[in-house]
Image (cartoon, rainbow, N blue to C red; front, top):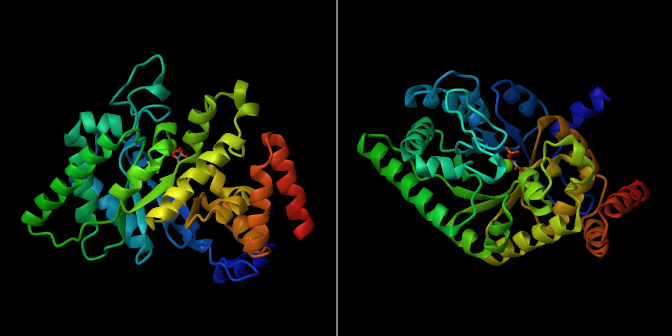
Length: 324
Ligand code: PEP
Ligand code: MG
């Protein structure tokens, strides 16, 4: 099996009928780099910058952040690395920046925190931009967006950080900027949001949680947390259509992309990048290389007609087993 997986690293992710599906990875710790490259990752679709913040006992300085980001960008160069701006709050806590709320998942989270503290945001973006000098494989992504206004504000700050570091003598192009779609409001605004940025990336972990009103970490309701729920599939279709109409790429970087059966549906929807935990990458690649895009599309059409998440899952598994 190990030998089989090793061979798999060398071959591209192409379906039997020739459709190319780029498989990227999600990273956070430096240890993720080696295992990602080992499994043949073609880029980083989500670098969780809060991870290096969580292992410290104070906010890392601009210089420290620059060094950490440089390590990531260099390790994957020339592959693209998508750095998400700080996504704290909800389930991600910093000991030195406590947030106490009754409903943390509906509270001060992600972009809401950093727009209220532009000094944190600016330092982080400046560090990312400086780290990318000479490499130019940086992409920036904004978490927990629920309105067009937040994107306007964030873009304004990114441009400001960029002109500041250019004035200081750095020679860095503006990186592509993307928005995470992980709040239902953003699904309904996907058409407007995609116009403002270079790509959309769906965070299916939070999108499932918020669409179904099911806490992603509560074991008591874990059996009704379903990324294959018809409502989630319809939301994904809406985002895919918005991206296709705008001619901009759509990625998925939630856990769903690392579930081989779900990845078949996401590919059929027209996703341009699937980004996952490195552990799941070989399984996804193996399955996508066994099937045809045309069969995946037929399966998607079938799945979209089903009104029950359990039935979607069993239909998928049965059909995939029959395909080999
Ligand atoms: C998501 O919500 O799907 C996501 C990728 O981000 P995180 O899991 O870090 O919230
Ligand atoms: Mg999220």
